[in-house]
Image (cartoon, rainbow, N blue to C red; front, side, top):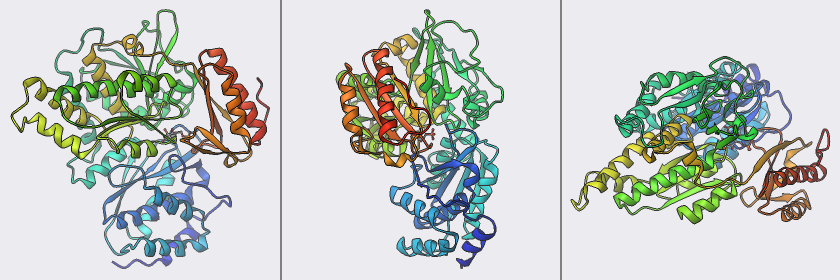
Length: 550
Ligand code: G16
């Protein structure tokens, strides 16, 4: 097949001219900004995804159009590599360069990538595209498709899907459907089959009640309609009551991000009995948090840290029971509550690694363990299993050496089903929810048993507007500021005033804001520490708008 690169410029000029002058970067989760500034970006990502597919011998590459937790006018795009992982970091740089060149330079930039990456431009390629339900997503999807077609690539659009579904489709395609069938039904089927087998016929056990209240708005995102469809496939194996099925503004007063950051219930929650399990997912259904209100009307959050510790305890138990020799580790970010980290290290005795924010970093780190559990406190995470872990668990389930007892074989079989239940490709709210329900059911736990494992330190997250968030550069997994001069020293002095105090400041990679995190021994100290750090950041990093009050 011959591909004429002149079409690259012609299409850009006529259909997708670059309409901005400021550079943008491939951030925490790809490119994110206002939707009207993204058409040329989408076109160029269609070009890049095709090149990436050809560089990977024609394997399928995914392109997901979503801005997940961002406000409604925003949209975004991220690329998915062949095994469902986020785009390789070396290609993130290529993506940033490609998006920031002028229309006139675009053709040369494409030619440069082809040459440097030794791409056979006439070879086969395949790109899968999915989008969330923002009203501007279809137009942006068309731009991605046009980018692929310009380079004579093959493109398949899945329309409105959740982010984890698209990751799953990509892996299915690249494993010849060994991972699962690359359709929405195939995805639902894989999860429900393993869930039902793990649950068996006894739906309630110990303190576990088969009743989960589900925030059906799912941040008013794509997750809502997919989740509702998915729930129909569950029969009564999971007793879910959905509230909030209505329409509304995306991410407005509901969803996992809202519940986590506001530390309160989503709007519209009906009167329910105290201590009833509730959960919320985010707009593209890749994050999950649980919560409940107790008999004293006190709100309690069970976030990503809690989910991670719950999973770690369960997997360690099964691994120990079946006796396979594998390493297990847990990956967090600086946002992880200090109490969770202490619990994992001192009680569970599992090694903890900390990475920069962004599941792409956590996922990468988790693959260093045979069983790598990773979760951001915001509820974004999953578990990855090495080939060694998979093989030894499989051998144990078949009792290959004939040297295992019944209990060991049963534990290995349960582990295999658990692996099937987990969407290893990326954090997936639906799969994570089924896993949490499986573990609580196995342990016979209700939410109070789950919460009792450790006590969170009071914590808070704030946003601050600055003229240019790039003046803040961070290191040490986001925990220390390198610039502006003197900011870190001031933060250290503030933190030292408060028992169990910890605070950090970092520029968001998805929104034009600076994020401030603080925790301390008491709620009062936590709020004061956050306000003080916010004020010093405002003063030293060029804050705009009203000065924060302390
Ligand atoms: C994305 C990333 C997450 C990250 C979050 C916030 O989530 O996938 O890993 O924690 O953004 O990132 P930042 O603090 O840099 O803005 P989502 O759910 O919006 O795709």
